[in-house]
Each structure stands twice: as C-alpha cells, then as structure tokens.
Image (cartoon, rainbow, N blue to C red; front, side, top):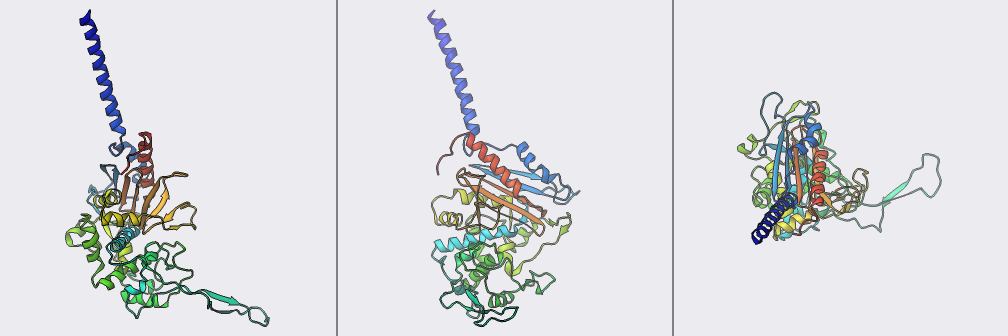
Length: 413
C-alpha cells in the first residue's frame, strides 16, 4: 500500500514538474526582451509595400530587448536576383539630422560647446547670423485714399534674440527648410551649393518669427550646425562625426562621403516610378540630408539610444530624446514634440508610452527609425525606393508593444 502511495506521489511530482517546465517555457516566450516577432507577422505588415512593383529592396531590423532580428525583401534591382542584406547601405535623407544633433549633445556633455552658445560664435565675423526683429506698422497720422500706406519700423522695446545651438537642433531657429538661393544653380543644385552661397543667404535672410518658440523642420539649421562645428574646430565635419560618435559606437558603415569600401556597399535608389536614380551629392547640406548607413549600423545606433549604461555618451543620447517644443501645426502629429533632431509621439492615442522616431522619403530612398524606451523595443526600416515606410515601422512597434503588454510590465533599467 505504501508502495502504491509512493508511486502516486512520484507520478504527481512528475506531472507538477512537467507543468512547471511548460509554464517556464510559456513565460520565457512572453518575457520582456526575449520573444521574437514572427516572419509571418512582419511579412503581413510589409506585404502591401513589397507587393508594389514600383518598390525594390526593403530591409527591416527589429530590437526587442536583447533580441535582434533582420528581415529582407525584394531585389536591389528588379530581375537581377540580387538581394539586399543587413549590411546594404542606404542614404538616410533627413534621418541624418539625428546623428548631427547627437554629436552636438555629446560635445555639450564634454564641455566643448554649450547648448546656449550663440551660433554667431561658430561662423566667421563677416557672416551675420539672422535674428528676428519685431516690426511695428501703423497708418500715417493723416488719412489718405486707398491703398493705405503704413509706417513700419523696428519696435524699440524689442531686443532681438540670437539663434543658439539648441535652436538649430530643435528646429526652432526660424530658418526655412532650405536656403532660398539654393536653386540659383539649377543643375546639381545641392552639389554646386557652396559655403560662400550659404554665407550669402545668411547675410540676407530675416526670420518671420522669434527663435526658440515655433517648430519648423529645417535641415538648413542642422547643416548650419555642422558647418559651424567645422569652422570652430578647424576640420571637416565627417572627421568630427567619425572620431567622436561613429567610431565609439562601432558604426563602420555609417558615413557621409566614406571610402571606396564603404561606398561599394551602397545600393542605388529609385524614384516614384521605380526608375534608378544617380546618387545625389549634397555638399554643405550633407550633414542634414546625406548620411549613409546600413540596417545593421542603424540597429546599433538605436540600441545605443536604448541601452547604453551610465556614461557621457548615454547622457548625451538621452538629452537628444527629451521633448523640447510642442508641434502645433500638424493634425497628423497631434500631441507630438520635437526633441534634438528626434520626434516624440504617443505610441497610440492616449498612450503614456512614447515613440522616439525620425523618418525620410527623398531622392530614391525611404527610412524610418523609432524606439520605445519604456519597453526597450525599436525598429529600423530601409528601402531603396522613395515610397515612405513610416507605417511599416509604426505597426511593428505597435505589435511588439502589444506582446510585451500582454506579458506584464517590463523590468526597470
């Protein structure tokens, strides 16, 4: 009888052990940072984009805690059979801005610059950085026939505010998206746009609103930031970027002009009709529009923004992610804020979680990078077609965070 009871007890122990093992496997599957998103789910999200015959190569990198996955679709050129990879290099367009602003934040942390430095200190004295001046207009003392001529003059009580480094990085400088004299050289407008052309523009431009208050996306402001650093530190911007940011973060395939080996990894871009485009040279605007990178390097960059431990670099990257100014002009960006280069938006309506992101679709390429600090998830989407990929990135982040929410709250840092 005792043998039977012992046998039953042993059987029950085995059952409990099996159940415990199954529970452990189930919890491990849904544990923060360890679960994998399925290829089926990613393909479903990307399917509309990849099925469009106009689009070519698509590369997706996903960060889910300590787990990293890559998914590739399409061909570099239709009919060639040549597939993209995580090492394929794409032009990042306006996503380039976040590298330049990250370098600014790092220099500020290192004490090399101060975010409140007037940008005038970073350009030759002959270049007059524009400032907003409030103008008062009033009718003449005696009424005259239509049209009324107004008397306009600078408000003597208003003290113009200088544009500072932080204004450039947060797109609140009052500068336009591109310089107005850019297209004086109609052929290869960007490539032929020189530093002297930029200086001429700055000497003639007058902002329409006060600096530091109103968000207006301005790659020109980011380019000014980079060219200001070049003048201040007496070296080219790409060298500054590589030495201080790219090399420490181990991003070997991220560059502006790069070397021959790096350029060999770049795949060609395509326009809205699917036609192959020549690589565009951006000259002085390159730090805002023409940094190149691969999905592998971008995943490392996003991971650094998520995971770096206590260090000067961590503090610098975290500073860039902080909301600085509300974006009020766009219904699409409702409840969104501008950081230093980054955009900060709710994960979804009324969600306390925020996506830190940036995107681009220009000159033959599209790019989206975004991450959620609360869940330590991130996504990189790259295409060598100009059709935007924002929705793919956002849907993947929503899927990742829905899975994590179902597993409970993620652990703290």
